Each structure stands twice: as C-alpha cells, then as structure tokens.
Image (cartoon, rainbow, N blue to C red):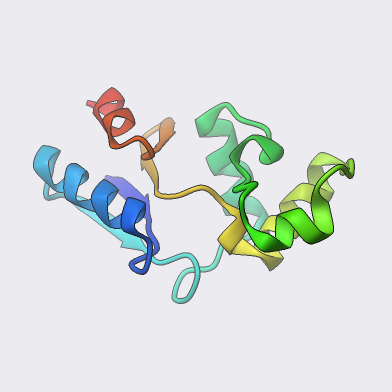
Length: 114
C-alpha cells in the first residue's frame, strides 16, 4: 500500500497527488497538517525511507525557518521535534511505497517508486 503525505492547500502537493493517481488508484492520503499529524516514530520512519536527514527536507523559504532556525545547528532529535511542532516546514508531498519514499517535488520523482 502506498501513502501520500499531502497538504491540499499546496499547489505542488496537489500536483503530486494528481501524478500519483496516474500510476495507481490504490493509496492512502494523509493530511499531515490537520488530520494525520506526524509522530516521532512516523517521521523517523519516513526519513529512513527517504534516506535523508531531517534538515534535508526542510522548506527553507518558510518565514519561520528564516526568522527562527536559519544559521542554527540542531541535533537529529531536535530537528524531529521542530518538524512535528511546525509541520509546514516539511517538504511536500511525500510519497511512501513499501521501504522507499520520495519527495514529490518535482513530480517526476514519484515515478521512481514504480
């Protein structure tokens, strides 16, 4: 089963959802900003599947990042906590399939899961 971590208000996330629908109709949508927030365990698992460090999937153009985080160093655990408390900082959409995951921006990344 595939899962897309989706923000319906985000143009890139909506494009990723549309792209995923061209490959399969069998997937779960998790709206991580509202209905399905990340936990330490779920975000850690996704990072392992992405093969990324937390700071590698941060949206650095967000105002909160620029004003509060830019130029500072945080541990892996601190980044996870920051991301859970500020999920809008996480790049989107994230598409997970079995033991792999991609960030669906650009949407062509989604094809790598098929």
